[in-house]
Amino acid sequence: MALAARSRLSTLSRAFFFLLAAASPAASLESTTSDARAADEARLSQRELLGKRIFEDKTLSEPAGLSCASCHDPAKAFQGNNGSPIAALARGSRPDALGTRKTPSLAYVSFSPRFHFMKKKDEETGETELVPVGGQFWDGRADDLAAQVEGPLLNPREMNNPSKAAVVEKIKSGAYADLARRVYGEKLFESDAAFDKLARAVAAYESSERFHPFSSKFDDFLRGREKLTAEEAKGFALFKDKKKGNCIACHVGEEKSRHPQDWLFTDFSYDALGAPRNAAIPDNKDPAFVDLGLCKRDGLAKVAPKGYAIDGLCGQFKAPTLRNIAVTGPYLHNGAFASLRDVVAFYATRDTDPARWYPKKEGATAKYDDLPEKFHDNVNVKEVPYDRKPGETPRLDEGEIDAIVAFLHTLTDRPAPAAKAER
Image (cartoon, rainbow, N blue to C red; front, side, top):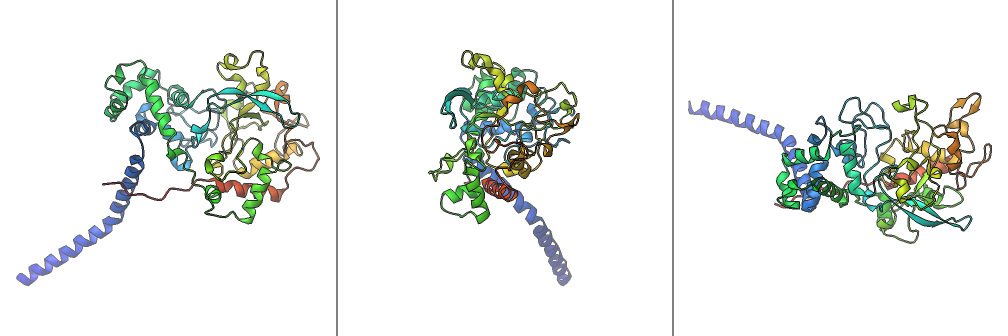
């Protein structure tokens, strides 16, 4: 009997350890994920942590189910479309709610200055002009990062809350209300300024290193830790060449600097590129619908210099950073292009071969078909590589386009090494 009992015990022990071993990979993965999350949050200030909680909170939409992170996915360089059937547009909290523009990435947005007009010297004419720069969104309608946070919470096409008070009430009754009180004081939820303060917490989170890690291959190249391939180096040279790609005219960096922070790849300016109309956008089924961009920014006349020709800004949209550009398609404000190569090719051949990009109407190529004809003169045709005519040789050939695309892939941030949380 003793021998039989020991045999049964041995069998049970082996079965137990077999089950334990089978379960351990999942348990280990869960533990690793939890540790990584804790380590990530340990780097945040209390205000940034509050911002993270709000950013990830799916109860803050109406109906519940949509968070800031749903459309600004950390795994996709803080952009995305929340599973929308239309790649270019994000799906809102209501099943039938879609935006009208491509969701911009939130990576590196904290470096954008407040919306304002600044003096800029035209390199060709030598004349100085006032141009709009900064702000948030494609049309700069949010002056700063906190205003950018507030808009989507109340937008019926996005999180669809009826009022600021409704958002505040949800946070007040939520799981991290005590954290909010620790950050802003016990009387936070009694204040009319509660909504603005909570938005500033999200802005603080969006300003944290999590959103601007400077961890790309290009950054390590600047630091002297890595070399570009011959193709990437060729693309970088073409990118900077003012007679070839001239991408650096808007997507700037400090040529002599080896500091990643000096290479943001945007001057935060606005430009009219004449993007093709995207037929996949439902609003575009109405021929009368047009997205004029910057010139329709709320309150623009109040901040523009006296006598400024605002109509000259119609068709302009903000130049985004090119950091993470290889993983943040589709491209342009209306998501007109699915591939990065198509965007670069469009810039190079828009004016030499317009039939490649625009539809035919009444037997002719309908150039700049997403912009009313009266605003066609606003489209940038003076700067390289746009300064070409139909039939002329483009500034970039197909191989050079490939090289620039190869370089742009070096701007993708790489995941930070896993760190263990302090215990």
